[in-house]
Image (tube, rainbow, N blue to C red; front, top):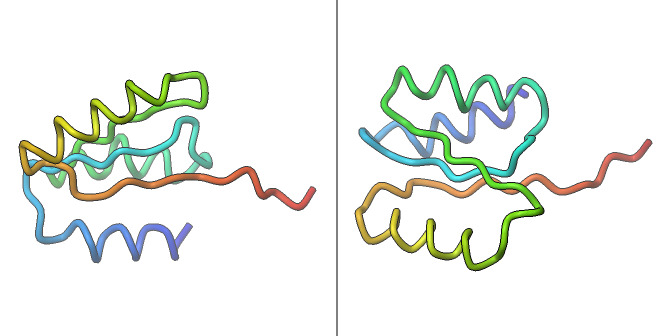
Length: 82
């Protein structure tokens, strides 16, 4: 959790009115960090799931990038060793 938040805060600190595109559900604590805490700093978390179409993800990314709002895309991999 601290590694994720440190990296995100470093890369998002210069952004105001930014958007962070992330997988849903992300791991528990980062979801709270993205949705609640980053909103305070003016960063909107826009989630997507594996059931969303690739076209939807691409279109949203393109729209955000063209508007200079897209600051970062976070992807969670299903690599839990359990």
